[in-house]
Length: 45
Length: 108
Image (cartoon, rainbow over all chains, first blue to last red; front, top):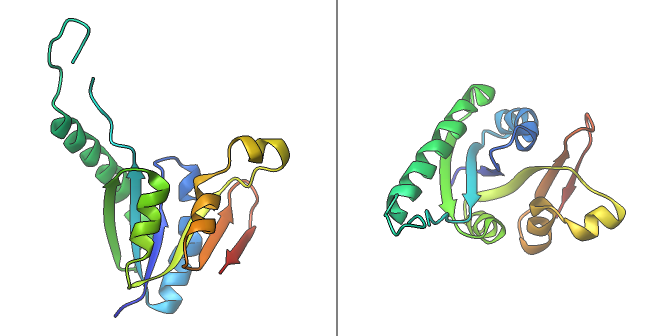
């Protein structure tokens, strides 16, 4: 099974600071990058 | 529902709207990952629990996250999601400290 690097992001520019490092790592390792955003479910009321 | 009892949006509509916005945000980042296979995932729930659950998928070999690495009292008051995930997951974690060029560490 292909290797996957999980990259949790919180929708801020700061959280994306990891992407350059991840890109180089994924290229070297031939890995898939899975970008994940997780948040509490918002209620509209 | 607002204060007058009027329905503004149903929960599933709100979830769809948020999921769409987040997906647009994630797609906007794909240019920074050119030449690499990518997948996008949006999960609703406690962020730490969702990240740890996703990380336990058998194909995930590394978690990579940015962190601010607060110190002292600030760390006690507001520990980051990244550091909490680091403590709870069995997967290796790569933390990249933003605001500190080149600073990173790997925790098993």
